Image (cartoon, rainbow, N blue to C red; front, side, top):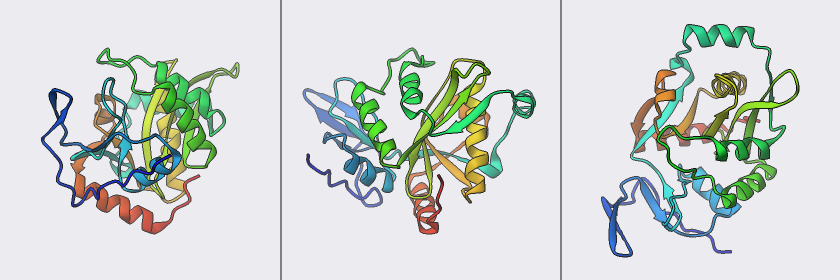
Amino acid sequence: MSSINFPNPRTHEFSEWVLIGKYYYNARDIIAFGGELTLENLRNAYSRGIFPWHIEGFPLPWFCPEKRAILEFSELYVPKSLRKEWQKTKYTFTIDKDFAQVIENCAQAKRSDGGGTWITEEFINTYVAFHASGAAHSVEVWDENGEIVGGLYGVDAGGAFCGESMFHLRSNTSKLALLFLIEHLETRGATWIDIQVMTPHFKVLGAKEIRRKDFLDKLEEAQKRKLKLF
């Protein structure tokens, strides 16, 4: 298995367009194409602020967006109804109890744009192994019958949590999983999470977009703190 020699996102000249086959595609957020989805490549990527995102018909793209979405815990906005539900919740929350079930549910979740999932079988198998290595983590939400009803997963990039995907089988359970995660991370000294790209869901909660350079600065600062998140 070959290692990918990722370019430095700070100095790399991102292309506006890239030629794949006969067609040109916008690539201002993509730092590399192709290579194998291995644990080594994932570790190297996340430590540099890069993440893979499968697109059907493309060699595997590796992203470092020019506008990066993050959620500062100090800027978190919890709507009154959600806060009330969080305070009275009867759900049980766990960390890393069933990573495989979480990512499999995330792969099956319907997207608001109607598109297919980017979490392929290869992604599931590789991230389950990534979890077993101690790098990827999950939050699970369980109902009173012990059935999983929501959750999320992401990657510890050396002291900064990079959110990957979330799902819900009951109303608001993915949001409750996020609130549980934030409370946990705050006890470990973290002050923000990477959510990669903005979504309406996260925008409502107070997320914002920052420049690529500013994100990389924040990531380096977090890594220097050597926080043990899990």
